[in-house]
Length: 149
Image 1: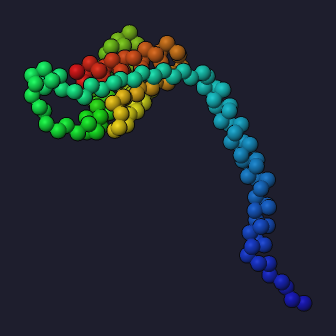
Image 2: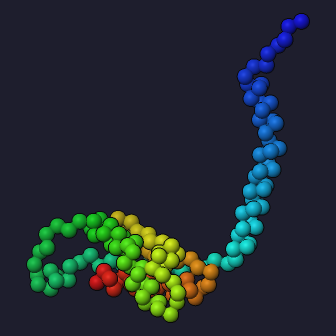
């Protein structure tokens, strides 16, 4: 009597068939857990603000002098670095003196977006309270504008 060895493909098919029920159970468990966590977390509110960068040197414009070549992508990247810096958020926290939010908390609540091809920087804040989200994003955008000026 000779034993016939199953081919590798048949062994793989059998392993997959055995794993399907476990995979389905784990997927359902994962979806249920994420839904429960989102429900326990409560509502989240988001607010956004956009800041237009003025890349024209007003001093050169008024005096009629030519400032030479200025790389606009470098200016936008510098503005993004300033918007993401700790100083911006510390200034925003100082503006919000009535709240107990620190600069690092404001930084973790806020994302800054922008592209080298655009002169627009976007600020977006997520918070548990609608009013707080609006207040924080406006404070961060204002702090950036004031500091950059």
